[in-house]
Image (cartoon, rainbow, N blue to C red; front, side, top):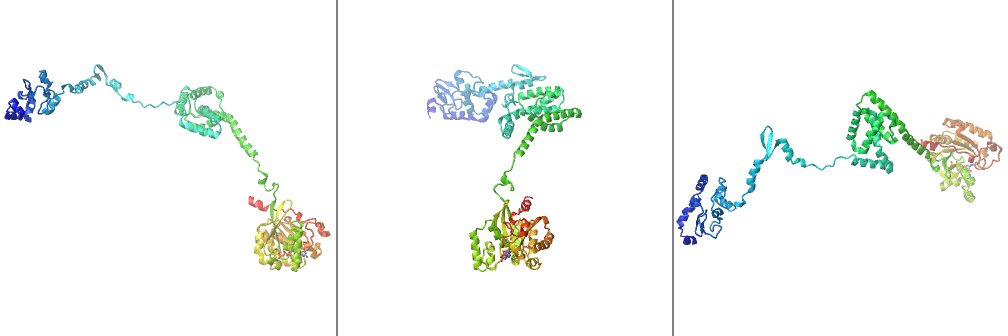
Amino acid sequence: MPRKVSYGVDYDEDYYDYEDYDVDHDLDVEENGKLPQSKKETINCGIWRCSVCTYDNDESLSACDICGVLRNASINSGTNSDKKTVEGMCKGSGASKMAKSLFASFPQRMSKKAVSFQKLNDAYVKEESNNSHTHMNMQGQFLEFHKAFITHSNRRVNIAPFKFDVPSPDDVVSDGLRSSKMGSKANSTDLKTSRVPSSINEKNGVLSKSSTERSDISSSLTSKGRHFSRDERNRLENDTGNTLSSDKSSVCSPSMNLKGRHDKLDESSSSSMSGGNSQSLTNSLNKRALNVGSGLSKNVNTRVTRSNAEYKPEKWMLPDQAEDTLTQLNLAIVGHVDSGKSTLSGRLLHLLGRISQKEMHKYEKEAKLQGKGSFAYAWALDESTEERERGITMTVAVAYFDSKKYHVVLLDSPGHKDFVPNMISGAAQADAAILVIDASVGSFEASMDGAKGQTREHAQLIRSFGVDQIIVAVNKMDAVDYSKERFDFIKQQLGTFLRSCNFRDSSISWIPLSAMENQNLVAVPSDVFLLSCMLKLHMIAWPSYRRFYNRQH
Ligand SMILES: Nc1nc2c(ncn2[C@@H]2O[C@H](COP(=O)(O)OP(=O)(O)OP(=O)(O)O)[C@@H](O)[C@H]2O)c(=O)[nH]1
């Protein structure tokens, strides 16, 4: 070992020196406040002994070559003050000597804050006496110190104070809705500015004349002030003063008063004012608001009236005023079998031009070929082979012709009892009916027979379907020589039955005619009796509004 050779230090001696690291011994030393001399760093010529491991280091070394402990600068300075040595500064700290030596190497780095903390701690606010406190060189009450040093006072949330002249989001939305409803920007502006006078009216109605109550107005305005600008508020107060002095000085727009009336209801319901005075003011306000508001209500009424008056339905909407359209009239042709229904229908269609002469010649030719020449007009409607072969109508034939007022739909119904259901299908669509009677002797009586005849049954069915307008066509008058007595007999017999079916006499038209000989249909009849009737079948105004009336009601 170089140190033993160089410095002649016996190993055993050093060993004993190392025994000084005993903790108890160290504590004893610290407790006495004195360091043993052996532990002190000794300086010989060109050699300084480490205070920790007692190794003799060269003078040029700043730290111990063995343990690395830095050389105590205080030794170099020649001072032994406890405050500047490791042991002195860390006395009673409980730190080991190694740590103490480490801290001792940086005496200049000792925490100044620790020292100043003690000073600062001493400078804290101390209560002296009688609620008097001191801080450094200042003295006062604790509350004053609190206000002076509190940091919360500076923590203010930067919230912009409410401004009356800035519309709130609710105002923006409500104004937008108003403007959209009113349809113009100017109107929305008027409505916006009308709030103040309206609120003036409502306030005038419930508030008294005292200045104290005016302050109530201001306070209430403040509570509701989100809807009023500052200028409006000033105007409100000024107007309130004016109206309190004189009710007539109030100048309000109708819309203002209109709104004021609505608000006033709520105000009056919640008013805590005394009954008499408040009631009188409210009444005066109501009168004033109604007087001014009557202008608006009049405009509204005029507007509604004008809109109703301006509305006029088009002509095509009215069924009776249509220019180019005719009212459809379903005309059912009913009666006993072989009474001449198809012949009458074919003759009418031919006379009215619905069947051309060429077609009529065709029917006549075909009917003659089959030996049924008298059915020529009936074949115009009985188109099926079976109907033509059997000479009877089996289904409802449909044909059209136009009169002056109606688009007539002819429903040629079968008269045979086997086809009563088909007859019903046609009668159910009828607005009016032609009951064809065979005037020939025996045929009329047979048709009126309850068991076999179809005249009664058809008349009852027609009436049961609601048809009250009926034409009794007494056909085949040529077969009875146009006998007026026969016609009167039939009229008397059948008339009694029709009245029993709730047909009114005024709703029954009696026409003697001959479909086969074209008498009393369209052309002027040659017979004197038929001429005296002065009633042509095509001249009949088919008086049936029943279906339209029933559909509309
Ligand atoms: N003498 C005469 N015969 C007529 C007249 N009208 C029709 N007839 C005849 O009566 C017969 C029956 O005629 P239709 O027209 O088929 O009688 P209908 O009522 O249509 O018969 P169905 O439909 O089967 O009930 C035919 O032979 C016709 O020529 C008329 O005015 N005078």
